[in-house]
Image 1: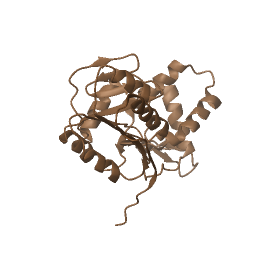
Image 2: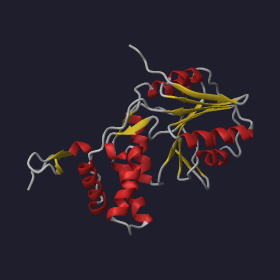
Image 3: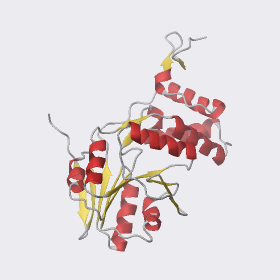
Image 4: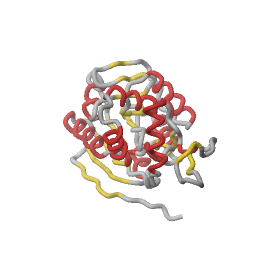
Amino acid sequence: MFRLFLLISAFAYGYCAIHTTNDLMCFEQELSHCDDSTLVLFDIGGTVLEPVDTLLHLKYLPWIQNWYQKHFLDISQSEICKNIKLIQRSANWRLTDPRWPELIELAVTSGATAIPFTRVIYDASGHQKRIELYEELGLNFSEGNCDVDGSLFQFHDGILETQHPLKGAVLEEFLKNSEVGKVIFVDDQLEQVESVYQYCESRGIPCEAFHYLSPLPAPALNEKWANMQMLGLVHSNKWIADRDLICCPFCDEAILSYQGCE
């Protein structure tokens, strides 16, 4: 079967390079050269995993922002954070590519330290949900030997979490008292890839940074479903999954699949 492979760009300055690709082959080749001095950092949302529910795809973040401005212009930032935490605990996720568990295992068995590196709103319940989700999907990262809290990150149970906008600054603090021989980083957001690349270049750390473009497009948004999901989130503190929604055959409005149309 023909395998779509796209290498849009690769630019290097001696020991650092950024690659943009929608295939994992070149990432796998890089992992095969890992050793115990290599740090491999995996972005999760949008890279290793994608949300099952359409509205939670990054593509529809502007729609959500516009929805808040249209319906709840005065909502506080703390309430929005509360909504995000609820989604972190409730939403379902799936692999963007079935090979991710094998690639993580390849990094670990090669001796590298393989760590999930994710931007989230700090939340103990959400953190526990991530641990359980990684186990359920067979994502067996390196075991964390200790828990560390920095000003820009939390590193608990082998998971590096941050609320900071750029991961390069986070990595700088995380590695402040550490030495690594090489960094391999993968993320679906180019600004994150560039920030990690620039940090490694400034420190003289060899770095292979991958801007991963999932070959699977985000599904089309059903705005009636999305509106009902947002109303449930704001008014009832509940996330309604796509699987629980249908369009009423009589009025074409979004309704819960286990309830009739009134």
